[in-house]
Image 1: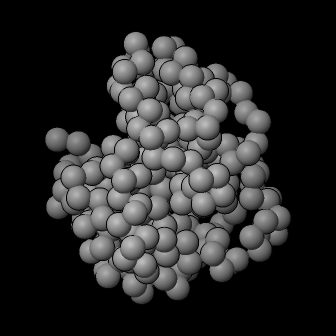
Image 2: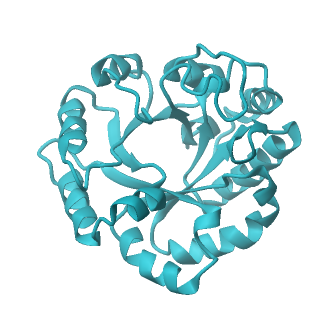
Length: 261
């Protein structure tokens, strides 16, 4: 048996990344690892979002976590980040995966053929260290709109081991059930996680306590049922700013984090 917190991930960014952005006027100093400790999660997706970082220093801070994945958005075009991940995996056994953030946005900008992602998947699975899983970020507004686009995109989904579904705008949570049903069909045979935003980036404001509570209850129910394997918490970079959605999550984790599932 595992515990609920064993299935929670932090979507980690370099500390202070979202200071004075997206309508946030406060200044955070919380690091990704501090965020994991504070929020009670046992896993980390590290996403530098364009900030130059020292991978090894961050990986040393992550050594007590169960699973760590790094964002390698450009790996299908430039193998540098892919090879860096494999090299780091030699020293850090808890590095188990890679993730591609904002995947459809990147794809639209760069027109990368699907064969490139098949090659990345092959390299991640056969690299001389261990198999590294390949995850994709997919937003609810990016599917279920155009059937032809969804059909075309399936070839890209097939390249990945798993997909993380995110809702960018808080107002779109009202469509969750409809979108989740489509998501299950779109990702049939794939592993799945759900992303939980605790800041309303799509509408430049704080997320509500009510929205955070609803997502925690709904998503954890899907986790208990085995429909998803993880919940990803966005993000450490606002966790120390007294936002209500973070307070809801930490209280929820204190109550349910050690629940066996």
